[in-house]
Image (tube, rainbow, N blue to C red):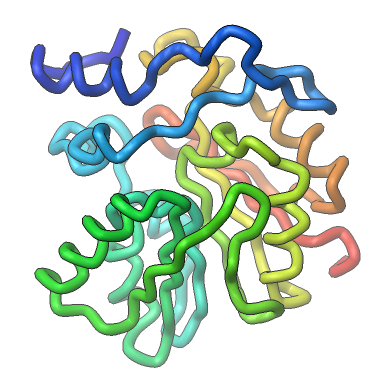
Length: 227
């Protein structure tokens, strides 16, 4: 069950993190069940006040080591919770490409961009196999609780590799599967071994894993050919 949520939020969260349908796809390398995508009906769960305590997003962003002028993709950005937090870190000379494959999420994202009065967050309609990001331009691609929902993970990783600069980083935040106290459905959690196995099979090299956050691992990868 979801932890520390009011009954209306709990109902919404359970809807958004529903069980996968019978016959759900499995990853061809690790065999894990690919989780269903959170729909726009769960958008409020992305901006819940409890998220500050449960996930400590400000610390997560600090751990990324963002610098002024960086070009960063928030892949699967939803309503832009992380995108807007990162916008100030990269400054007016930097850019945040906020991608999502759901037009309704992008509509909500644009409203939040307008309210926040930021001009360096660029909404992008992504796809299931393509990021639709400019090739070779990203200093970093960030996936916050998103990778485990990719329906075509191998194709998406190839598209991410094309979007990254030669020394660019791919960073994943994923709920810790090793920790039974993390109150998230199992198909929405990933272990260190599972992430390493899947990404290294697609040409990425794990650089480091940080365990500073309350519920999530922070994985840093780079393209193996960048060694």
